[in-house]
Amino acid sequence: MHILLSVVSPVFGIMALGFVAVRLRALDAGHVKGLVLFVFNFAIPVLLFRSLAGVELPEDIAWGFLAAFYAGSFVCYGLGMLSGRVFFGRPLDQQAIFGMAGSFSNTVLVGIPIVLTAFGPDATLPLFLIIAFHSATFMPLTVALIEAGRGGDVSAGRQLRAVVNQVIRNPIVIGLALGLTANLTGLALPGPLDRFAELLGGAAVPCALFAMGGSLAAYPMMGDLSPAVVLTSLKLLVHPLVAWLVAVPLLGLEGLWVAVAVVMAGMPSGVNVYLFGARYEAAPGVAARTVFLTSLFSIATLSLLLLLFQA
Image (cartoon, rainbow, N blue to C red; front, side, top):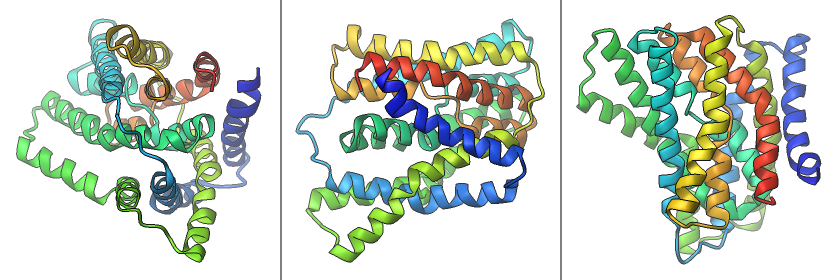
């Protein structure tokens, strides 16, 4: 109950406030988009920079936690595609969206606030390692499958250039990289500049959550319910379960690294799932409803995960 009251309720309460604000038309889609841009381009990069610059780096990094997180991701991606083909008779381009919906975690708008609130600044490094590879892995894979399903030709060189460009221009990755550099070099911000970074970074968590709620309110809720329920089960139940099985029984990991890997695996589906579905006109209704359902039911599943890890 303490976990629910101290971590989960405030987080999802702010999301609910954003949802209600958009539904009551106190804010419109343009306002939410502007808030999302502020969060992605300014507040969260500064928050992560300052957190990573000041955290004490461990002598040994449990690299296996990445294998655990991504093993769960790829298993759920494959199962999502398989369900789309076998149970719902969808073509390959829509199967790719099914796979992404069942595996792609909301690492930024929900993951960062939840993990940092629950585990503190020590969780910044494992967060950084997951975020650094997440979008760069699954976005190009999804695009390639969609193009293959439609007979398109996406060369490996083009995909590689797109991935590199996404990574080096991503403000969140830049903030994390600069924070790690500052930590390793012992660079400290002058007092006024550090206070500036503290104030700006302090806006990241509430603004990200409010923007996430507002974004959910703006998404259309059309589409079949059955596929969304299957994909929601994959994302919230199978993904963290596989991550835990790989991390603990298989690799023998323990401590904070396991907690971050499993909790991040239990995050709701990322908003990019719907954006990809809408952009490529491939099962956008299923994508939108999956994002909504995973965000709704993750209130319970994340509470359970945090309770199990005694956050």
